[in-house]
Amino acid sequence: MHEYRYECIISVFVFRRILFRRAVVEELAKFGAKVHTCSRNQEELNACLNDWKANGLVVSGSVCDASVRDQREKLIQEASSAFSGKLNILINNVGTNVRKPTVEYSSEEYAKIMSTNLESAFHLSQIAHPLLKASGVGSIVFISSVAGLVHLSSGSIYGATKGALNQLTRNLACEWASDNIRTNCVAPWYIKTSLVETLLEKKEFVEAVVSRTPLGRVGEPEEVSSLVAFLCLPASSYITGQVISVDGGFTVNGFSYAMKP
Image (cartoon, rainbow, N blue to C red; front, side, top):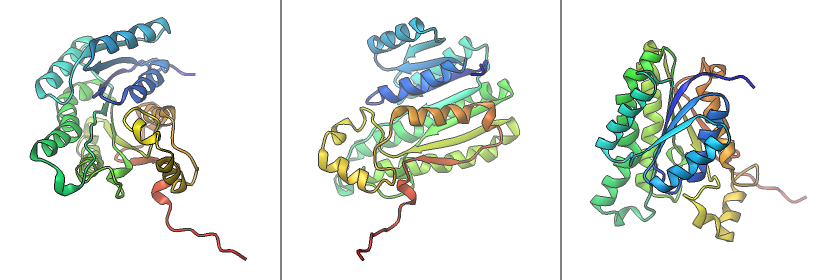
């Protein structure tokens, strides 16, 4: 395994995304990246940092609610100090959701989902740009969802924020290419994380998901984190502006019916 001496910040809204955050941090740290991550929960962050340190991984962290503008600015300032004003990798994994019919959303719920899922990623990328440019080799990875590509019953606002992230990926890839910053996006289907754990406890729901997934199962966090790591490393140096689904074939699965003889 090659080691790449990259500085990386992983912005996460830890609410319901602990397993996935851990998988991404560990994947990159094992490649030799110096990783800085964040959490709203000091106790949980300390437990993770101690575990990573015990396993020989170079990971630092700070308490931050990435849905709050002032705290995002503080996070980037901390990263700038930790990495001497340079940053190779920014992973935006901030997300939340409220599932309900469109006509039932309140203005407060709309604002919360939009600001958490979209504004946070836009703003973090914006204020991290000088650090990414200064590194000479920058990479941004957004974590979107197949809900930004096709209709899902996860809510119209959630889908809109993910669709916007997909387009932001394309815009930044073109606008910041001259700064040697690549931008890509990973769009998962149902992955075994705490964000959807209550749904995956329902047998009928899982059966419905599996029936629409050609590979016949839900995904594992490591199956997403491995792609995220790839998009950050030199092996993907000619890939930018792409939205890649990690979905077991879900988004390409049209209508199929086994005809009886």
